Length: 75
Length: 232
Image (cartoon, rainbow over the protein chains, first blue to last red):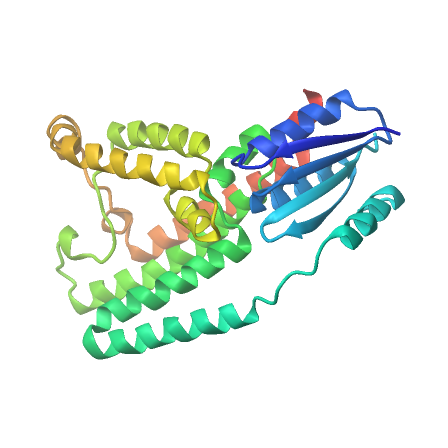
């Protein structure tokens, strides 16, 4: 299963979310997207949107103010 | 909601991470400094001390809750999510009651008051309100934050927003310079509408709260109904 990385450092709201959903459209079910961001609003709006869409999601703070969001396409 | 693959990725990533330093000493030092400044202001300038403490509490609330005015008006249209818009409606609901108490008190103390003496920001309303709202709306969505959101993110150390602040300062300076022009052609001709003077204090409050409740339920319905992006 493929993993995709998406670099969203220094991108303001709502670019990380838009990039993520464009990438998710290209992906097959079961593939994982790793989104790297330093925007704390992404944690909120990407997670909220993905949950609403029914995909699997979780995130890790990899350093102060930097996160990796993991999204597995579920449908 | 998570899956076994994500759990595994997370675990793997967490073992690679180096242990981060404890931030508690910084928090204690910053809180102590804020309190020292507060007590100094209480001694020298009472009203500055109010601004200081209210500003800090507002900032903490906005940062921790990720309360964002631009997202609240942008997300319903862009991703069909209204959770922040509902938060704004709730905030307006509470502040309507608060302002009612303040203004009604002012009215009781001086029943023959003029419009200018009412506490709060009563401004002429007209086409210039719509023009300003559109300009500000475009700006805040491109910049990724309204005035308070930009300041909160600069405080977090988000460098890009410093550029936005520079633009914001340029914009407000130009705006102040051109205010006279707008005032002459539009603002001075527009009326100030203060509902309590037309329909009474209590009916105005009830009308406003009722409208906000209706808006809240519309926003809630829209959120459940809408997944605009899923169809794209």
